[in-house]
Structure formats: C-alpha cells, structure tokens
Length: 473
Image 1 (tube, rainbow, N blue to C red):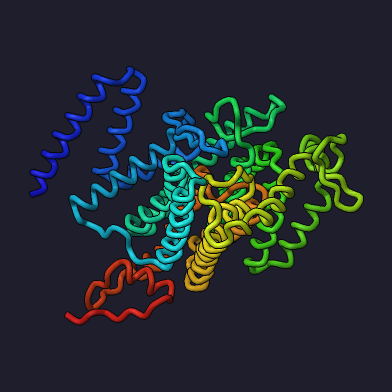
Image 2: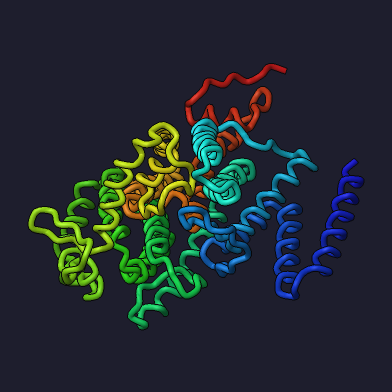
C-alpha cells in the first residue's frame, strides 16, 4: 500500500514540475525546486525539516513571492519566503503523518483548547466582517492564516520530540542561529543606523530583532543560572554577551522596556533572588555610565524631541511622535471597538495598529481578546506547572529562562505586534513545544509500564491536567 502511495506522490510531483517548467521564469523555477527539495527532506526526516526551519527563522531572505490587492484600509498582505518555508514544511509533516501513520496528528496537550478558541475567535470575527463588507475575503483569509502558521511549529515539536538528546540538539541550533544573527548585527553597528535582522531588505524591523534577542537571551540566562556544568555556563555567558551589543543597537525602546520586567522575573525564580535583584538594580542605576551614547539619546528622544505636530503632552512631558502615535492608537481603539464590541472589525478590517493588545481588541472584539488572553494565560500556567515538576537543572534552566522571556515579550507587545510576528513567534513556539513534552520525556526514562499510554495523554498527565491510569492488557 505504501509503495502505491509513494508512486502516486512521485507522479504528482513530476506533473507539477512539468507545469512549473513550462510556465515559470528561471528564478521562480529555482525557488519552486528548492521548496520541493525541502518538502521531500522533511517528509523523509522530520527532524531535518525542523533544523531547516530553525535556520530560516532569521537567516532566510525576505523575498516577496506574492501580494494581494490592497483592501479598503490599505492592508494588503505580502507573502515572504519564510512564510512559504513554514507552510511547505508543515504540509510535508502532515503528508508524512497521513502516509506513514507513525504518530498522531494533533496530540492532546493543555494548549489545544486555548489555541482552538483563539483560531475560532479570529475566524468568526473575520467571517462576519467579510459578510458585512468591511474585509476583503482574500486579504482577510491570508492574514488569518499568517496569524496561525506558527502553531504548526508547536504541533510538530510536540509530535516529534522523543528524548532529551533531541531537546538539547534543538536548543543548540536555536542558539546557534541567534549567535549568527548577533554577529551579523555587530557588523551593522558601524553604519550608525538602527540594526535589524539579516536579509530584511531596504526597510528593516529593529523592534522585531530586539524582541527576538530579548527572548533568546533570557532563555539562555535562565539556563546559565541553573546549570551546574561550569564549562556550559561559561559558554552560555559568552553567548549572552554576544547578544547584548546588537540588542542595544536596535534602538528599540519597546525592547529596552521589556528587558526590565524580564530580568526581575528571572531574579524572582532563582535561589539567590536578593543578590540578583540587587545586581539588576545597580546595573539600572549605573546604566548612564556604561550605555552607548546612541542608546541614551534614543531613550531621551522620547521626551526631548523638537516640537512637532501630533505630539502628546502628559503633565509637563511632551512625548515624541512615535510614542504619541502608539498612545493615540490605544485611545482610538477604545473608542472605535464599541461599534463592534463582541467580534470587532475583523482581521484587516481596522486601520493598522502597531501594538498587540489594542490590535486584537479592534480586530476580534471582546471575544477575541478573551481568547487571546486565555491562550497567553494557558502558556504561562503550563510553564509554571512544568517548572514545579522538573528537577533536572538543564530543564529547570530552560523553563526558567522561557518564563522570563515570555514576561518580556508580553511587555514588548505593548508597543509592537509581538505575537503575530513570525520571526519572534517561531522560536517562541519551538520552546513552548519543548516545554510541553519535557515531563513526558522524564517519564520515558527507564521504568517499565504495564502498558503504553497514548502520547497525548502522557503530556496532559505530566502537566497534571488530567489523571491517567495505565490500561491493563
């Protein structure tokens, strides 16, 4: 049966390839062939596809491969190479599951219901907006798909990870990618411009790079604090030091702000919290002495920009135009969401808002905002459960750093659309998937069971969400 399925797949691939050769330019043909190779590699070995995905997170060029027509609010959607890579790898994984049937499709985890609720809220809000004429169908549908593409990463990780050796390999490749990004960022510093992720084209996204470096750096910091191996700790500290210069030279004030609660959260989860809190406080007090002048100027620019139209004045403070625009967008959303309070204006049905929480409220209403907070709460609660149930220093460090980074991202989202930026969410959901299965990997260490328990139920049981009893043979 499997040989017949493989033969059919090869015939379909040959037909599609022939059609592409006849109707595509050489550049597009190379792109399609590359995606086909990645599809086949992932089909044969899922772990290889995940490694490709890790390196593509910030090291793939943002080549525009498609663009919808602009909607009424000038919210066209652009498809980039990294979007295609994630979709192709995800489809290959689904095809492998369908053909080989070696693992389940969507295993039961504590996050399935929150993810489903979030998806349903966005689909309902956008569907009603399309019927009301506020959203163009194609643009809205593509944006909704882009919102959810990173959930593929989570389910691939939960399905694929089987042992701690795999976890350590994935973490190593995630950190290696961040190290390469940091080195490339250091080479951008002499230009005097705000640095951004590699291969972003003429318009970079420093806030994206800042959020990414913050999250990865805090994860590494948590591991450095908990791990007992002195050599590994030194390597992690060196890695963190390499992330610091590009982080500050992004000049991302949202990232600077997010760093403070992230460090405080990390300190509270350590045994020497008083010492670390003291060090963090001293570092903040002395920061004017050691921070680069361009960083200090960027922070002070918030309050000393020359007088411009549309600046917001709060008491004796006059805020710069960028900060004022973000605060104004919050006010506008709180006013306009009342027109459609329950389901919002639909995804792409409202003007662009560069802040996560008001954007969710504007686009999906109170229902979508509740579902979104439910998802964030569930991730946070799951991480805390796993931290309490894990004793191994490596795993505790990983979870501790993740929680600190997660706190930082939630603050980062006040001024950035953090939780829909693929370049931040891909590594985020990689780590969520790893954390979800960690207790199950602990249970898989030598201890014969009366009978195998389904993998999805093991995950739920390890997280102490449902009781599980071994089935008697």
